[in-house]
Image 1 (tube, rainbow, N blue to C red):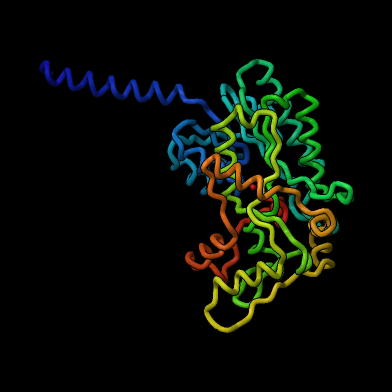
Image 2: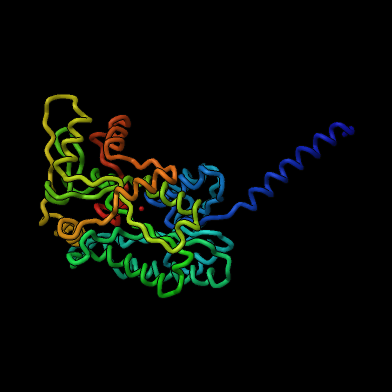
Amino acid sequence: MNFSSRAVFFQSNSSSYKKHNQESLRPVIAVTMATSRQGSSVVRHLSKNGIFRIRAITRSPFSKRAELLAKLPNVEIVQGDLLEPESLERAFSGVYGIFGNTTPTKGWIFGRGSMVRDYEIEQGRNLVDVVKKLADLGTLKHFVFSSVCKPKDPLKSQPAPGHFTSKWSIEEYILINGLNKLSTILRPVSYFENFDSDLPGVQISQSSFPGVVHKDKAWQTIAVDDVGLWTRAVFENPQKFWGESMNIAGEEMTGQEMAALWQKINAKDSTSVRYSMVPRKLINFIEHDIALMASWIERAGYGADLKALKVLADELGITMTPLSCWLREKISSGNTQKRLPNIDLQRKFVTAT
């Protein structure tokens, strides 16, 4: 190797070393349940900005969903389970921030449904206990927990569905453990994606727009992708969001208004679109907690302040997804008649994962 080639070799390796060193100095954010709808949204948006390295935590690191996430820039896949605190301690080692979300879904059983409150509480307790250890060590700087939107009318909030109260109880556990100052609570409302689910009669069609509340009741909703947008903004602006709790939504419309919007967007013929409410008795039979949630929405309602959120979104450079855009994307992707696969009941007409 002559002098010039040695110089090129040195410069090349020096540059690579510098790049590697810079990458290793970037703060790491761990995302639990990374292959869920909500988790993958958070991973995708955090991976784009180049500020953080993302540790995508999943029980199944070799799944197809995990493989897709692994192809994103700045992302590594790590095995971890919310029911195994030791695995969380390993997965969270040395991280700057954690995005934590939990699920009540434990497999459907006749007479019980799929949602088990204690199952989610156990996950939340394990998560917060490990967060507490890291906070005491001084290594963790920011904890973002995904909860569920609080009610617009608190005096009419009871009875509340179990998969709402489980998350609110985890919120209380965060406060009890003195983690408020380094925590941010995000509380999404129902997902747009829930309007095209695996539940019987809950698929958007040319003539029908489905829902679980009465046609004249306003209902706050959000695109699951927007949870990732808000989470990215929170981690990028820690001083603004430390110690804060936010109800987040993107729309507030009645079922009739949603059906009219769908007809306007998908006006291929003169067929009128009707809003189709899934019978409450049927929902109660399939998943009692979802039926309880539908009654809760009608009685108390989600309490996100859409005007204030719009102001904050403009300040942070966030473009929230309107339902109209989500529906147009549905048309352009050609899945108007197609059911969306793998929708977990945690977010089926709940809030999104």
